[in-house]
Image 1: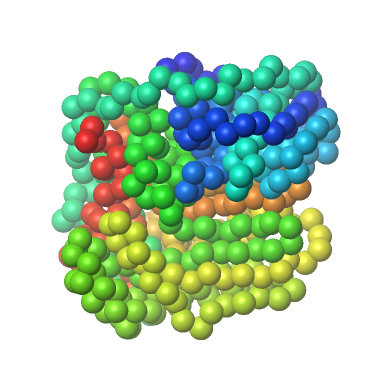
Image 2: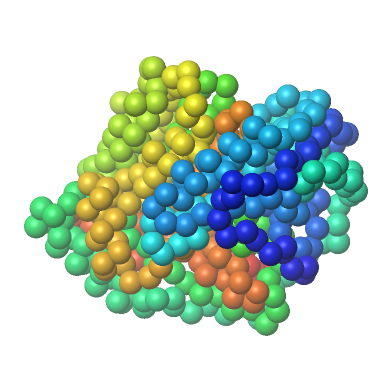
Length: 424
């Protein structure tokens, strides 16, 4: 696979204006099949719709506590100076960037990238966007490339902590919650997969999109996954956020799973965890919205491997400069990935979790020049580094959480990416 261009390390106040052109094209087939065999591919796909891209026209790598602000300012500069010809006029056409942000203020790296080529599909409309620094980029060849090869000889091992050690961390979190230090904390663990050959990210991406079509399959700068959780979508004045908290594993038996779904919907432990997450999102979005709709009760979202309690929060954003990235920054970290109270939970995570999350559980998605965009939470995800893949899974811990049950839930959440690395 080809090497990515050397990235810039920070936002710059000087740049060459981008020249961007978007044209409507005939349907070229499955979006993920268009990706070439190279490292600098990007993807955000659900039910065959969305955006894929490749190449780097511009990139920003902000870090630290002001990473969102630095990325926003960098994007505003490019949006203000770009020369854009957009014949489509849909959210995601014209100038567009993909982003992935670190969970924690330190350590961690984040990235915002403008691909040289973006192919988008929305409904029956398909388009291609090219972007170049100071020049018109050549039109791409929109034909399906050579299919990726499966990883070979994949083996899995515990990451930072063994299962037993992680159960001990969960027990410590429960103790702190019962002592009144906090109400909820989300703890994650990692799993490391190694292959005999470098992993072609197109292989797990295609399998994730096929197995989890209702999730948002993504790839940005070596981070891939299929997230069921939309942190925030902003589109023409409307904002929505899908909150997931409270999980139960599926058995594969439809009748049994329906009974389990009913149990989940009545579980006081899971309803409590879910309430914290919904309240966190509603309180964070309220300053940006003139009106909001927060359903009184969650619904059960059925995925192939697990079921979640889910709530869709919606609102009308105030007129003003708040972009989808600003909203994502305001929401991060929500109680669904951090805990309650947020600042206490994040400190507890840093103290006892025992690993660096990187960009796991941070915002991932895309944004256009108008500030519209979609940002998911980087869950059911993994970081690819050549032949090594680091998988992540997390669980919400509350007062009556059972360490063994939480470990089993984490194992279930590894399944999507773990299965995507197989050759079946």
